[in-house]
Image (cartoon, rainbow, N blue to C red; front, side):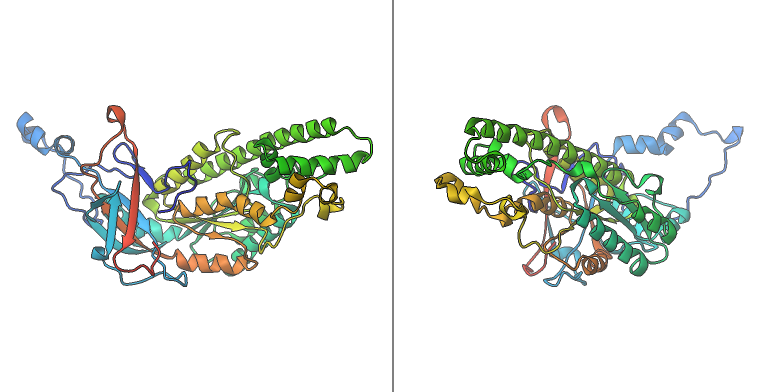
Length: 456
């Protein structure tokens, strides 16, 4: 498993014990069974009332208290080099490690998302019993797909591209029984943010997606991006000198005081970082609410498309790392796989001060530090803003769809890729808890023996 960032824990992290979404209490001697209808037992007459000894023997709660265990489950996709689901794997081919220790796989099934048997197989993996009505609910619900539009980090062009991607899905990819939700970071979708198979409702939700003017971090000249603001605040002399030269040119090349220009740049950089941190925190909090709304993974897997232009991960402003880890944890508990889409499509470069109509005076200033920065690598800035998109996807079992102009086709391919998965469960015996016996997070690794060509 790959990490989101060096400061973040690995994504597929579960606490052994104390997790209602994963840990289920079952008698140790009872094996997972397929769903069956519960039989109603007749009420005993007064003459038939059991004795206290019989009550103690027949009370199922007493059995659970005396002998209990937990089953932990996870669903995994296995794809080949073409990104297609790989069929035909068996339990013995999977290698499961928890904190580096090999664990036996006690339950194994191949599952089709949205099928009539999905809920039943998930219940069996947990050691539960469900009745026929619960098993048939999956037929009525079908697959679950979420489009989360990060309108706090989208340009007007990005919003239009997001609307186009979702509209193409609604008209061409959505199938009967599929439950679809359109959501946004700002909440502008309003009451239309609901799971539905009604195309008219979804079309209306898409029409509500508008560009958010407050997403602009800075409107002063020369333009300063969040990437540049971070560089200034972190003491990059080249970035500072480059922007100072641009400010001097914008105002009065011959008489504008350098110390005033430097103070302006430093103050703007701090303001941009703080505003960016607020927008990022709002985005992550809204995303967590959407992911947690489903509850547990008992209803099966759901696919979430996160559409954004990306943003910088600035852990020094706010607590984005902790909040993003909560999103990843919620995704694991609810069976949500996140695929991130960069709405910029194929990015070949970004606008800087010189390309925005401001002569690049830094190149003419003769300053070595400004010269070194004036032609800064815009590709590095794009990569930095995509880091969150990569981590969020990889740490929830999905993929980041970046630098791609065919986002509509990518969505279609993703739906095919996530239509099937393997469901595994194991008993976390002998796994250490945290201090004072409290649950702690664990590193879970899954691989296919002898098949380096397959990706889990």
